[in-house]
Image (cartoon, rainbow, N blue to C red; front, side):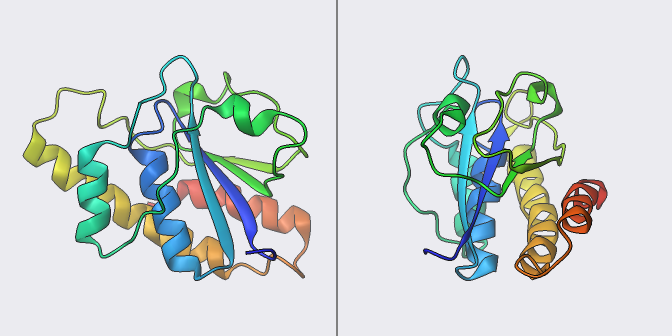
Length: 165
């Protein structure tokens, strides 16, 4: 995807929220975006959470198999340059490094469902609700005029999507 816009989703463990967002954006954007996800190097999960994979599958969304990345991998010079970095976890916003190429950043805060003591059935339902919420935001993101729009207005639009219920 040489003309695809690159988005990096950031969360604590890169096992749930960021995995949902990555899969969903690539699904709804139909090639306009290349999505990656990453997490805190000190808390990075070995693999995506099973309930995230279940929610993605139940929604008919494919997930590109990708290794788990910590955010330092994307912050290094010479690594691919993202246009947007979207943090899905407010608790890590101040911990993340400076990003290569100074991409536009936004906070779309979602609760840490996996870190709580939620039962499997409740977590499954919450994962589906989160995926629907992400899908609404990501459909709007993928319809924005990225190539020809006003960069400042676009930055504000992406940040404002974080307040969409």
